[in-house]
Amino acid sequence: MKGRFYGSFPIFAQNQPNTMRSPGIVRRLSVVVLLLTMATAAVAQSIRGMGDSWQEVFKNKKGTVTALWDDIEPFIYVNKEGVLEGVEYEIMESMKSYLKLKYGIDLTIEWEPAGSFDSIYYKVRNSVQPGIFGWSYFSITPTRQKEVQFSPPYMPDLNVLVTNNLEPMYASSQEFTAKIKEMKAYTMANTTMTEDVQSLKSNFFPGLPVIYKEQDYDVMKHIAADNKGFGYVPLSVYIVALQKGIKVKRQQVLPSRRQGFAAIMPLHTDWKNVVDEYFASDLFRAKAGVIVTKYLGSEVKDLVFENVQESAPALDLVSLEKEIVTKRLMDTAVEVQKHRSFRNIMLVLFVSVVLLSLLLYNRFQTKQKLNRQLSSKNNQIEQMNQLLKLKILQARMNPHFLFNSLNSIQYFITGDDKKATLQYIGRFSAFLRKVINFGDELFINVKDEAALLTEYLWLEHCRFHDKFEYEIKVAPGVQEATTLPLLTLGLVEEALYRGVLNMEAGQRGKLCIEFLAEQDVLVVKVTDNGITRSEADKLERRKGMLNGDDTMLLHRIDLFNAQSKRKITRHKAVVQENGTTLNMATLEIPQPLFEQVQF
Image 1 (cartoon, rainbow, N blue to C red):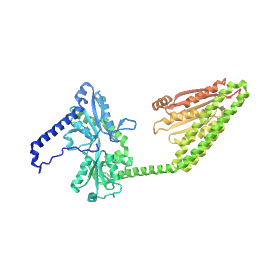
Image 2: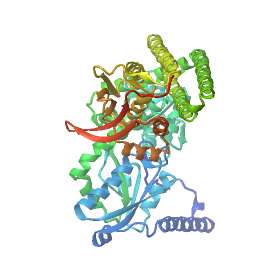
Image 3: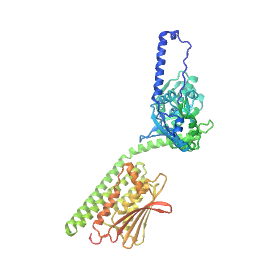
Image 4: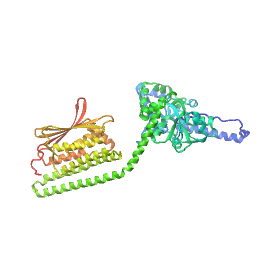
């Protein structure tokens, strides 16, 4: 992992005492050799039978290999959902597609967490089976090439020197090495990072203290906490650490370059040729850049590959470092501002609770008024009961829109955008006044419904301004036609939240609401270019979400239809228009809306 280095450490025989030849020492050495032999056999046995040879796989057109791995983000790790992913994971998995496409082979890859880099290396080196692969960010070194086989490198190998943030930026290698006597090195055992640190130690200060840590990010965290700390880390891991908020400084002197990072296989494996063939294929060349960009980002990927060249300019890297640090500082400032805005948010919440209480009181008054009407009109009890249920459903819908808008107010206040906050609160107040005013009415005209839609879509567009656009069309002569309050709003919200806002990133949705007249019927059409409702249902089931708004809309229509001879009808369809798939929801509302009941 991270350019780790394994080799054979020589035993220096000179000046050894003669007691080394004594029988007791010989017996002890024999026991040690026996134990090492048994340990090696145990390692080999632990993966025995887990990896088929290429010859077997090619002959049977199927087979299984084992991939050993050690967790290091972003190369191979378990994400928040508990799924394995990363650069090395996708490279290995993409080899299955290559073998299937070229040879018709169904390859199964068993991913086994090895617990540590050491375990991976020893298991692969001592494996008796050929179909074993090791993935843990391995550097290709001459010493390792004597013990294991390497795939071709998938990524350049560049270690950079990092120090504590309080250290100055050294202008030359000589300037840094002159200060090394005052410093302390952090590294990982048996890695190229250690090799680079040991090289400095041997050449410039044999007494340099070297402290070993378990993982790259641990190395950088200790350097960040130690004013005199320094060490070597891979360039790509350094950039990811900056994004994680680990505060270290990259020195532009004494970089260390090697052949590259690759997977490892046993020396006796027969997979080497087919792996080389895969890495040289068009499929790998097409996927490798995409995979690295996915996990490192295009800028980081370009910088990692470009900075392998000695002559490559470092200005882009410096610019990226400044951008990452600036973003981190901005995030910190936003967090501080959130705390400062807490009282303002609480004030807004208090005002919102008061408004909500007034709204609920208004609903209570409406219910009392309808109850008095029911008691005075015995011959209309059943009909008015249905209307009361209709009004109660409407009262349940209003707070739903209120809470959505409160989220936006909180967002603007958190961002300390006073102008946008005041503008939004003003439009929100206008929307709320309309909702409260229309709450006492059993029906409203199209002009008022369109005005309510305009306010609602303006508020939602502020929240998702880059996600959609909208258009409201009212045909001549239908402004005084009547409809149930908020009935159209239910269709619009469904189109927005289930269709448009579920579109893929980069796509822009469009909502179109039309009010038309056809004989004695008001026709309302709501179209959107979002995902279909069947796709939305699958997405909601996958997320464990239940959509109750559609049920509430249907319930209101059913309650109206129960007391009226002429019915409100609703239709849904998926249509094609100029090569675009559109969702269309249509309401046909009879006119006049109520014929017999007096209000």
